[in-house]
Length: 138
Image 1 (cartoon, helix red, strand yellow):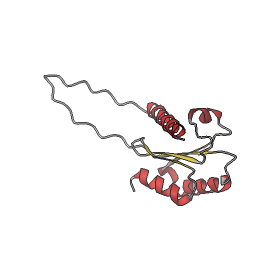
Image 2: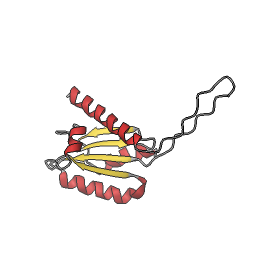
Image 3: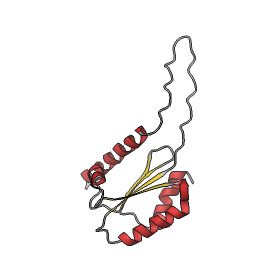
Image 4: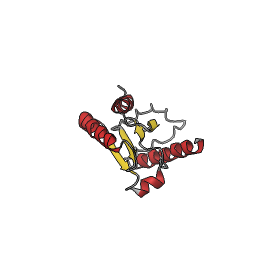
């Protein structure tokens, strides 16, 4: 069980790194020299939080999971990205994120594109709302 959790965490971190690499890169600031004073660190650009929701056709609560995510998508609109991934249909995701046997699985990326939550077997609407709200800083 410990190995599976570690594998999921590592896979999620790899996914985060891949997602972070897809954005615009800020210009690199030259290193301070003796003739220039160090510049203040620029604030991190905020991004739209993303809920990565892994499901499987074999989930006993599959219909309820789908319904809850659809309702949350309507409720949050464009303020949250929803990425619902059926690991039975998306073999690449199944290979990159070893979540078999632990679906539904939530990986939440916050406004800084960091993993703010990773929760296996989560499908209840109130639990999902709590995860989303925390990532949004509410």
